[in-house]
Length: 493
Image (cartoon, rainbow, N blue to C red; front, side, top):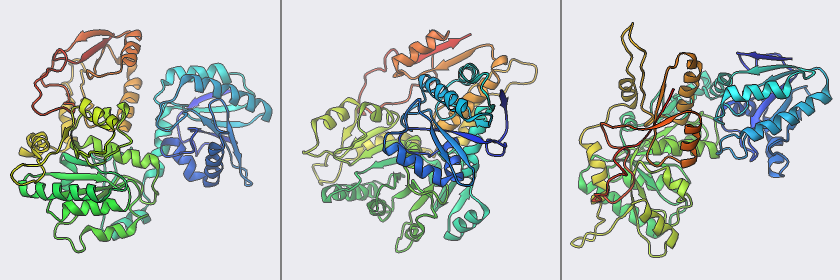
């Protein structure tokens, strides 16, 4: 028996609770994070089985506690970074059906498989569930996608004790902050809050910089200070040396933001580096739950925040591992400058050249770093302080007067991936009232994705723009036009 319901996955009485997982041992977001918090021993066993290669698509991971807790981990992703696949849902439902047939009549709480962070279509997945589990000798409560989002949000909300501890350290708790890269919009900040609404110069150092890299960063920090430019530098905390790098810029009087990919209560001594012995204090910010330790998803979340707020980027890492086609595309909105090293690989040099990144040379008369390209990329933003992103979003939404056609628009620029998912979910709920849908895509959209949209019924049209498309990293004096001056437009009826 299948019941499609709304509600809380953990409040509903059930013998078995199904969790959606990846195959690499990470539970960092959504309903999986909630399961990790509820059943820490289950997570340890699941993580060990992932390392042993026993968790894979189409193969359930079953855990039972001595107290009677019963969890079935359903692989909906192969890697936590990847989207879910319909074929994996199909194979997993076959295995889940076979398992339920062996345990007799039970009640099961089943989330919307792959339809939260996995990005799958709920209408299609719900039909797969009906086909695969219809007639099973169990009472299966199937929850809508919003239940998974709520479950993930509930475990990331700090308790009153956590808030008290955070504030005692000197952090401010900001609610619904537009710069936050988590679903809750919470941000924990020590220092200048106004820096979080500015556009940043993102620093991309290596994890263990050598003496030459540190000297280069020190020279650049000094030159930024001499230039008088109103620059805000930001970097993600990678290792202990990230504190030293942030200090190089802060001590020169450059406004500096250090982003933490872990909870502020897990590294309490960091609160002391904010202003002790500094004439120009650092600003420290974290969007992670206060007691969350470093994890790959939290680091990815922090990097998303850095990218979303970066107008330009400074690469000092001689061999950046992320500089692949996929990795460089994530920084396409930022103008990239880099420190040139003689020993850098040809791949790094060619890739940087391909994306239009500019090397930082030295001024002939003084030998100081030449930051002209870097500062030119920032100048337009710095001449007039940018508005708060939440203000931008409100102005991009046009709500019509009563009695007129409900025509709404919203820019995706600067919106987190989680907010995009929530927007698309809201659109699905309003689908019965949607008369037409226009999608404006960037010029570098993946061909497979474009063809898929056309197959679904969109037709291709040219859409004029009042403003140019997002700038890619390229030489500042480039006059090469962007394709035909218009982005791809798709209209669906």
